[in-house]
Every structure is written in C-alpha cells, then in structure tokens.
Length: 352
Image (cartoon, rainbow, N blue to C red; front, side, top):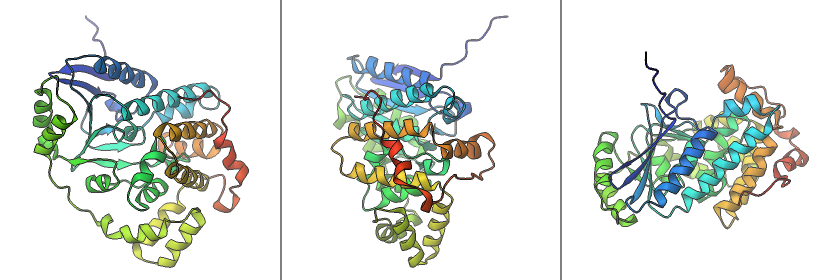
C-alpha cells in the first residue's frame, strides 16, 4: 500500500500573476512554527525574484481563520530547558515581519476568520490587508502573561487616539470595522467574493503594481458594518490616555459606565506584569522611528519572557490545561522597576 505524503504546513504556489502562500496547519488553526516561518521566508524571496509574479497573496486553509498566532505550546514546553528554541522562533518570525513591511511587491493578506498574535504579524504589515464579516482579530497576549509582539508596538500606536492602547492592554477581539479603524486592515470584502477577487488578482499582468492590485480590491470592497465598540471611542480616548496602568484603571473606575466596568473586569483578569510591560512598549513605540526599532525592543522582551513565571502560568491556563483560571505571580502594586528591567536586556545579537 502506497504511503501518502502529508500535505506541507505552508503551500507555496503560483496562480497566474499571484505568488500564493497558503498556511496549512489547520489542526492548530494555522499557528506558526519555525518550519512554517522558514517556508514563508523562502517563498517571499522566490516571489520577489520571479518576474512573472506581480503580487503575493497570503491566506489560511481550513474554515476557521488565517492564523491563531505563534506556536506557544512549543515555547511553553521548551522554554525552561531549551530556551534557545523559543529565542530562535521569535528571531526568525520578527525578521519575516520586517520583510513583509518593506516587501518590494504588493503583499495582499486575507484576514478571514481568526487572526491573532503572529497572524497579525504576517498580515497587518502588508500593503493590502483585507477583512471579512468573519474576521475576529486580537492581540490577546496580556491574557497569557505575555505582551503584544510581532511589531505590535509599532502598529498599535498608529491607531487613532488610544484605540491601540485599549486593544493591546485588554486583548479583546474585534471585527472588521474595528480592525479598519485601528489601521490594522484596509478594506472589507465579503467572504463570498474572495474567490472571484483572487481570480481577478491572478489574471493581472505580471507588470501590475500596487495601484492595479488596489483597483481590483476596490472593485470587490464594500463598507464594513459599524460595531457597538465605535460608540465607546470617546471613553477609550479619555481613559487610556495615561502612561500608567493604575491611572487607566482609576479613570475607568471613575467613569462608572457599563462599558467601563466591563473593561475593568477584563483588565483585572490580565497579568499585571504583562500590562505594565505592554504599556511601556506601546509608549516607546509611539516615539520610535521605525518598525525595526520596535522589533528589536520586542525581541529583548521575548527573551525576558522565557524566565517569566506568568508566561508559563498563562499558557498553562489557556492552552495546556484550558481551565482559563491563571494564578498570576504578582499584582499591580508588586511590579517593580527591576522586574520590568529584565525585559529590556540587550545581551544578545541584534535582529537587524
């Protein structure tokens, strides 16, 4: 009996003028691992050098989403005994995030279904970012004792007002209109139009550029339905404008509205250490000159995570035991400057 070769975790192919990158680790909701990151990097190089390819299209296989993030189970299992494995994953992932941001050809990402963490990293840095009625986007890292990475400290401060601060600290998931408002996406395309859109992109001439790709996308785009979250932007602007987590919590408490109470409950369930680190990174990102500067800072923080008990406890509660009941090691009042300093250690080779 002939053995079947398992399908690759990233399917790389050419479809007309499109270089296609299809994430295909469906059982893990296309979560990224090192082999996948390397296949993406190789594909980006091949398509950039292929004159027959006008644009790159990134999609997720399966019915559930583009990508649920990085393979945190692997980092959890290897982190204490083989920290170099997690460090290598983040190093290669962040380099790919940077490449996507500066890619020389149009880079189209279809952010259909679940897009979290590392999934944001391989989509939101692209030149053409599409969301659908099924999009559920989040940077949920404060809920696992981690922080929004993959260049989130560059992306989230670009959102209007304090919307990026709100997303980074709460980790709540958002839908299409919110993602566009946050400047993490550009266009809304109904999911039943994606196949025709892909076909039209594939039929572009190989000499097509960003304007041609944009014109095809515009033909299939429509307005994303406005969500209730838009009614709370004023509150978010007021309450998340502070530079300490304590002041943000105080402002929400003083507001007293149902939305403020709901937001407070969400924040109080998050790792205090993660929230403080996240806010520091977001404020530093706001003053940064480039994505690469933010990625370097985030990479230092990832290495500090390998010795952070809250990270292991958060992953245990969310992914391993799935009891959704993490016992964080410290409260807000217990987080010291020394604890945060270990996430800024630069004792490693730079990424760039």
